[in-house]
Image (cartoon, rainbow, N blue to C red; front, side, top):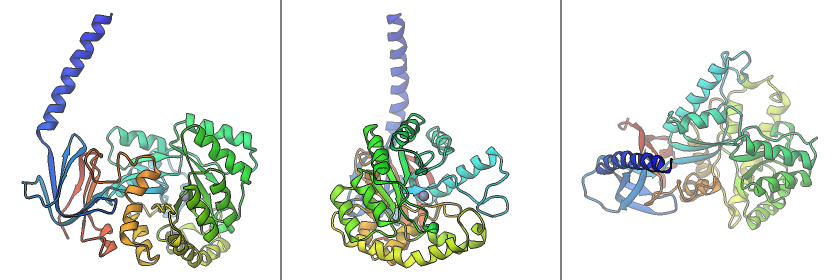
Length: 406
Ligand SMILES: [Zn+2]
């Protein structure tokens, strides 16, 4: 028995070795006019060597022959959206309700959303979240075209649950395959954003997630809900429309990531009001809350930028109709919010990776990292809208897009 196993494993080793050496014989070299490494570094005329899905060399001012010569383009790490709802889509009638859809329709919409997102240069997305995410995550892992996916599965929203029950729900989510736990600690912005979960409930969820080695991502608008998340040991806060200087200082002190949204989600709702009006809390009052929140939210973002050591990551909260337009959030942060382009780019690359617990695998162009590389038309450090012009996309060494400049 032992001998049989040994023979089998040796045979496998031989086969693997053969396949690997074939891949090794053909390293891919990508050269571009400039390279932004995701951590503040910039190189001119750099060449990146990719072998077996990983970056093995980065050479500045290279003149070696390149497999892909992306003259005039800027090479960056694949972008990361830490907050999307990848399965969300408009229904058959063009409205944001999916009544009467089959499982197949829902699933294919989700796959399409993932593909649109990938082609827009987002090689990793955290979806927070829906149960269908799990099947999409598995499909992408099997090789279906889409961004690397992390999911919270269903969010925890019910403030009627006691702390003990909430802990139990966290354990169930993790057992079901959640990569992180999403908690609603406040109402929706369309309902004013007031705190819903008590400080004790928030701490119970985030503490249990942490004990299981998982991250927690907390929806919080009211300043008190943001503070509860920071004090409760939560990993990240999203939205934070009504957060003030005091909460940003607290988050920085506790190392809590902040994921604001100033350029995609509310703008998408306001632009597409007829698609939403009459569904759930998308009533006239809800739209009035959102319109009033836009300047408040922008002011909060600008305040957050003033806070030293606050880790601001890129997340869009992209829903129906926004998949593939994720870079609009980065553009808004620079153009309207006043964030430095280099910081906004770090937020959508290296810092985003760190906030997903993947900082040692993705988000930076450096030897040893997975080969998630994109190239854009122009220099995003000078013109941030270049991030909307993605002409080359590689994920894990596989090229999904390589088109000529228009
Ligand atoms: Zn969301």
